[in-house]
Length: 477
Image: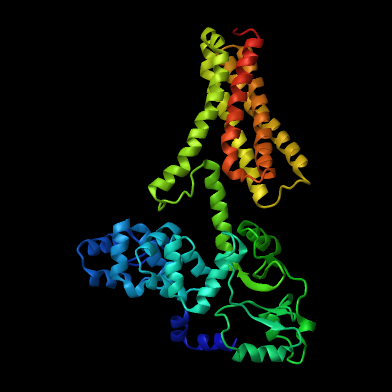
């Protein structure tokens, strides 16, 4: 309150203390994105070989904006920019770079330069920097690091990719339970090598097993003479170092965690995860699932063309194979289609609506599996729920298409397509739940494999139901 009164008494001081929230300037637009004109000026300076002008343009940018600039340039311009702004290539810039862009930049740097950058980063960021290098380059970079940094990074690399052990920070504060609050405060004020940022202090036993945790707010508001054992929170969430990063994100969301202790197989405290790391994980995993559902690979515009081709073409080939199944069903009813051309006109409607209905249910199911909302205990309830939704959707669409076809063609054909629509939407709802669930039970990522099979089922059933009912009703045969 004293600071607020001081600012109120001095309008000039208040104006100076108020943050400048204007985003739109000569470099950024109103959405805080680098303006195309600014990017063109940088590109022109690079093409002219004017390193000094390039440096002057880039120097005022925030590290995150420098990283954005790299991502907006093509590969050759990126390397020219790195050469022009060498001393601006801080660890903060490297940490903000897109994965594919960072890999390209790291490959262009000498191992000693990469080691220098890695030495300035937190362990988790340094691991992310080094882990994608090939084995020879990785060894060369590790050899350039200080022994302590090298040991920490090698320890992290021993854990599987995308696990808590790879993501965790090894910089944390751990103290024994016998200390008082005053002892802890004195330690935090004078202790060597404390993390630059931390939210809580972990209390450990003589075997370095975490037995409790103290938030900094508790420490600062508790009398010095109180023992840590009397104020610490004993019920804490411990994360195994081998836990998959997606499950880590789910735990942080479920228990509203700010930070959490990471333990090894013996239960010893080996690191911590903080919410800033996990927010990135949650966003990454959510985007990954959406892209996997479409078979688009990483879906990154900076992904090399060969990798993008490889990721996408295999699912297109698989889709081609499943499409042949639907074509075979159509061939079985070739004579009926020849007799009644209207069947060929209306077939895509039945399969298309069924495909959309299946995709909707599949997306809901995959998300529920990823968020641990769908488990063995409630699968039956989920199936029954989606069947009811599918029945309502199918009946609604069937009434609309049935009435339209009855007016344009014949009432009998309207009734046939309405019945086929209900059947196909029901099958789509069932497939949209069961296919991802089955893949999940088989330990196959449902986001990767479900789409092709759900599409095959809805297309095949749509054609079979519509053409089969048309033949059975005597419309064609």
